[in-house]
Image 1: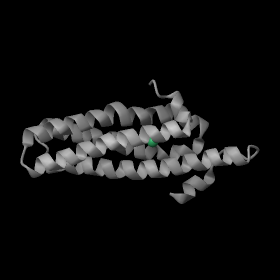
Image 2: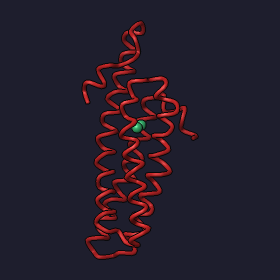
Image 3: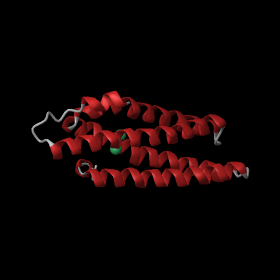
Length: 153
Ligand SMILES: [Fe+2]
Ligand SMILES: [Fe+2]
């Protein structure tokens, strides 16, 4: 996990979110276009690439957060459920794509759900991180655990 230590840096964490989001959104736009144009084999290839991005980048990112960042910032543990849902839906989408051999409505439904979850997950996670770093910067004697984070979600 080469980017593990960089997660502790807010700007690098934010950049990592933005890069994976941009690639997934670009892939989803392509996928919707191929489906609209009835290009099943191109749609299948893009869906495979999307699931690879999910597995190799986003799920790896989530694992690194759980392994390293959750210990440093316990308030982030509320995001475990999101990470779990991501992994489950990626598995389901991959299984269904392999089984059906095409991007069926069930595969598309999972990929769309993942996109929506990612958007909300990033928004909430960054909000908690911002509060954490702000609190550390403005009142170093305060307890670093952010109970507010749980309340806002
Ligand atoms: Fe993150
Ligand atoms: Fe996360």
